Length: 229
Length: 170
Image 1 (cartoon, one colour):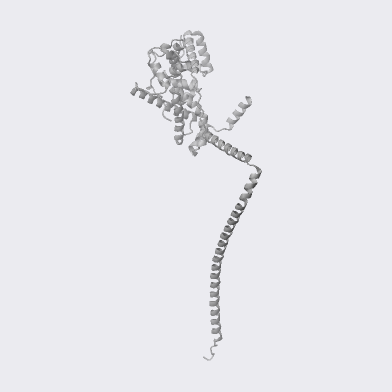
Image 2 (tube, rainbow over the protein chains, first blue to last red; image 1 turned 90 degrees about the vertical axis):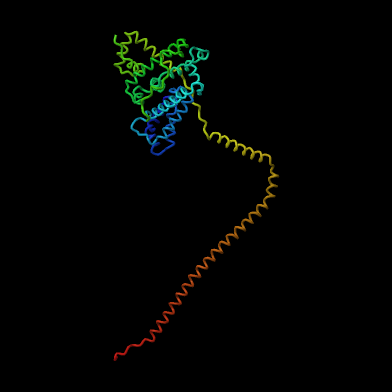
């Protein structure tokens, strides 16, 4: 195990940085280098897209779209900052766009909305006035997913980036282009809201989660401030 | 009691608070039950986030894998056919077949060789003809030039023979 770690560290020493790899992609249209870059970042970007949208299929699509966008805009890449920041921003903006599209669709066609089974589950969960047999069987993971979806984007984003993606608060501030203090206050608000949603549910009061309470319903008007990279 | 700002708790919860800030917050937590209760709640919520596990991505099937399978199947089939053929044919049968086809193959080879030889001969003759024409033209040119030169020399000799020295008395 130690030998493996040693060789892993050694290979990292001689490997290219993401910035160098992206520079090669930009200047030489190097598909192989892009594939390597994609191999390194595929998993975290997939996870981010799924966590932000709460939808596995949509998240998978958005991951593909992120890398398509990255290659499409390769000539615009400037190695002034970290490549990872650039990539996270692309993915997040695509997620926000997708969520807005979905929200608009729901507003226009509230009765005939089509979506994945998860969408329907979410709708049932958020719209039903009280507990039902299905809600009672919802697993803890599903409860967490639904609770996160009920958070406004700005709070969900900081939680996902910090907890699931393991980014430091300073890095999150860099990605979102906001002061670190703002990240901290958003995180505190996110945790407070999340606790208000999850606590009763995990205490066995499932009916309180999906009923109208003093927590604002998901809103997509509080948009992410950063500009498209 | 003065409570810390809410935003100060975020770095504390995620283990990013600076040592000094961490000590102060810890001290406050020891004294303030209200903050302790809220922080416990938050930490519990953070732990609960782990309950949402994502399904593993489906491994993309490589495009060349089915082609490779078909190729392997084809090779196996050909090898099998050859093996069966060799195993089922006896040595006498092989000799008979060889004796039957040998004269035919020889005749075909001879015919092909003859045709090839004729073709080569024609090519050689054509090349020789072209060479002959070129050489003849060159030789004729040299002959004409030599003849003209000889005639000029002859004329000059005649002129030289009829040459008279002018008289000094004139």
